[in-house]
Length: 178
Image (cartoon, rainbow, N blue to C red; front, side, top):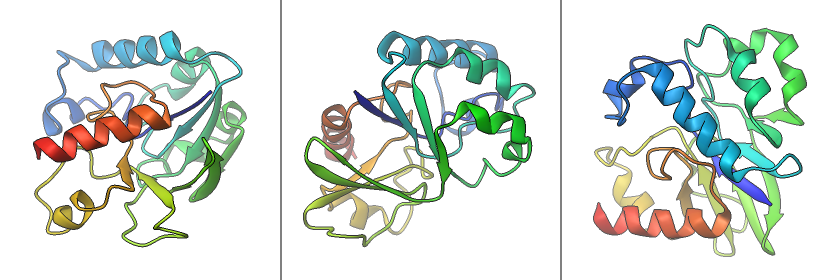
C-alpha cells in the first residue's frame, strides 16, 4: 500500500497554535500522529512524506525508529536543518525534492510546494504540502478550482497517512467547505 502525509512538524510546539491543531501539547501531538501512522502503515507499505516532517524537534531519531513502513521524504523548507544529521538518512529509502510515481495507474507528481502546472497535469495528480489548511492566499482560488491538486497536509487528512483515494476524497471535502 502507498500512503501520503505532509507537514507533520513532529516536535514543533508552536505549530499547535499556528495551525489550530487539536492537541494540548507537543508530546500529545507526536504520540497521536505516531499512533495514527502505525495503526495504518505496515512494514512493507511505502509512505511519501511531502515535506516538513520535523521542526525544532529535539530527537527526530526516537520518532523515526517508531514509524512503520518504507519512508520516502520529499524535502520541505523545514527539513534542511535536521537532515544535516546524516545518521538520520538511514531511516529513508530516498530523500528528494521532487518525485513522480504511478499509483492506482495514475501519475502522481510530488513536491512540498504546490505547483500550479506540472507534467501531464490533465492526466496526473500534483500532491503537495507546505500551505497546511490555509485558504487565505491569493492563489487559493486557483488551487481550489483544480481537482488534480491534492494537499497531503495532516490538518486536511486527520493527522494520518492516507491512500490516494482517501487523499482525493479529503481534498474534495476540504475544497467544498472552503
